[in-house]
Length: 424
Image (tube, rainbow, N blue to C red; front, side, top):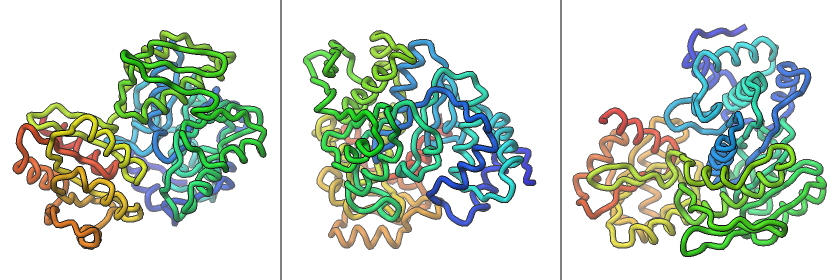
């Protein structure tokens, strides 16, 4: 049986112990979970899937339920700076020792069943939450839904934030196919809430097959922006004069609307007052989503890494920074639709600075040179050792009226925040 004295030791081993980085399927992880938690007793659960917006929905739910005074567990991925960010109780990451103890318990029951890095983390979160006397647990799907490790848990409500084209090797290359995979989190008789304004028909079809209670943005609930704030409505309730979500961008109204619908659908089990909703919307925080850093030249961070996310980013930049030259410090994973992201972003970017990442999945400089060349884009600089050098080069060419934009990957945003923390 494997044992490590540090969280770093456990994580390093997990990264290498399973033959596949991504290994979709529930059989292995479900067997270990059953051994870990034979009773199957779990806290009240909301599961969130979607191409973009999952983390935002979890953040809103966490803020609202905590404002109401509930004890809340939140499992998200990936992390920005520290692994512990993935498993939070009452807004705080759990400590190294607690995670290591959960890994020990998993190791004691898994026998010869091989688990991926993500499966270990999911089981650790579920094990920690089961022992934490929670009022509710919030679970973010890692990839897809139907075959994601999180889906071993039957939720009491399910949210799908949006459907876009991403992870095509695992989920398919159409919104219908991807919608089918994500709708795998639906269950019999539970609320199935969709925040995508144009949902693929596969979501509704699966909800009918599973006998879930389907609620769609624009049909069963929605929002209206007003001069001051906004109004949320459903067929049975209206909440007026809501504060704008603290997370920025038009898409955040959609995410917040889906979350409000979920809280009201579960109100008979976990009541929430309107004041908790208002306070939660105002006080929510989430690093890396249109995050503006305090600097003599403004620095905007966004983890957007697929075409749908960067369309939203372009919309936000156009509305909020219309007259600024934008210097983009950029990197992506090689399995993403890099060409389409460049095509969408190029009209609003003045120049680009490629920042290589120390990650096996990251696009190399050779690949990125090829991508920029195919797009006939020559306003790009290469040759940097990492984020710090690329950012310094961009900053030297910027003036106080410009904007430094760091986007394209969670890992790049992590490098940026780590650098800023180091230089504080």
